[in-house]
Length: 222
Image (tube, rainbow, N blue to C red; front, side):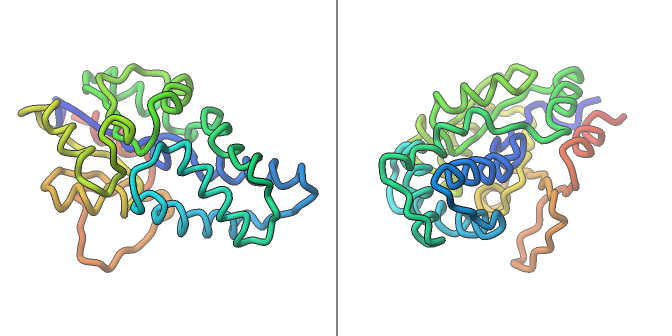
């Protein structure tokens, strides 16, 4: 018996290993300039810069990625030419799924769950990513479609309209972009806590799993 009818997923960070994709893209682009970057510093800086760009005003995610690349490079002392800053957006369709992603999605689809994606991305970039994912999705809600970025509520309210009265669980890794807004909107949320983080802000996800595979196992158990 299925525990829910519809499962929506954040994509980058939940299904796709975006930190690996970002780190690899920065390393390759910097290497071409003869620059060596500390991967940890790149990711830490990126996580600080990207949300600020997204909350500034709506702009296509391709532009968000390009601006983020420029500002990360500037902060880390890499003199990145403006004309080359699109490297990050260009790399996105090659970012790989996590090792457990496709098996988990196939298990859930085989159990009859309706699957969907809620993502801070442009439609064309997500189309490239979907080629790595071995299941079909009933619908996707992107930043391009709704003109805003999570944690703003529009992704969730748009999904709620499409789902109507079906039993719905949102599945995501990002505390800031997904867990907090879902909890605030009363949407059941399963936190994929791959890093075994501990939170003290009073927000409580409905469920917590260390991997997507373990979430899928629970969702398909009798």
